[in-house]
Image (cartoon, rainbow, N blue to C red):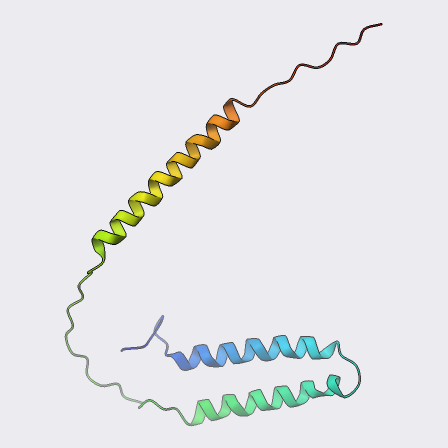
Length: 115
């Protein structure tokens, strides 16, 4: 099924994002004073209406179209391999430099107390 992530469509993510934003907005508005404080109810009801509209009036059909056989070709394999190689070399180089810095850290002598 095209357009799915983890087996669910984009509508689930839209509804989840909607409710996360509504929760954040409700928390922010609950700290306000006056009429703005009571607008939490309006935000909640509007999010509920939007969710019900998305739930009862979906755009996609209930039965997916039969899948056609597609051949997946990784055209960026060499570029990805070069990128991973360069990043691995940079990681090993920086690890070497950190270890050299740690090993060669100067140890200063403590001053002697002279009476």
